[in-house]
Length: 266
Ligand SMILES: [Zn+2]
Image: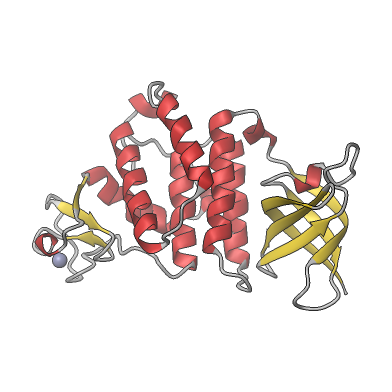
């Protein structure tokens, strides 16, 4: 049977002599594995459409439900060229792909999630703050994988902490902790007020409508640490692309982004 589907390449693995197996995230079919014969050969007409985080329309043949598809034809829709010349954005883009591959279970499809991943790449290509785009996508993927943190009330007692009340983050407890409950969880860490305010906003936000969010460096760092600890507790997998990203971020940390001087609007 012939399938025609829009997808984004989230994984690309060499297979045999010059072939690739690409994994696409699609809206209607979830993750789809497709063999691309001769993709690694020079002048392959499929070279462009098999690059990681390429958005295209793919036509493939598949003989039965369990088998791998074979690519017949593909049309490039968006290569997200704004990402590819930039080391830091490229590292984020590769991380988004690997994270999506890890957190989306086989056989589960969501148009909404596909639209969010596409919007994440569009936002990266458009020059939006990659840390904010990344945090948003992580929160969408956590929800899809059934491991969403509680961010707007205490994960233990359910109470909404007072605005000035010290709050804490505990992946073991399930997210935010109020000042009364925090002592019961050994993994708790204090939460910056900016992170406490930002997390529920990001969790509800739609990546397709992401404006220019300006966040203080300390808030950005606190946000990344909170989500990283969440991932390590609830998803338990080493991501190769995250190590690369962190090495690149360590270099960029000495060069504040232009918006770092701005107010924390979150
Ligand atoms: Zn509580």
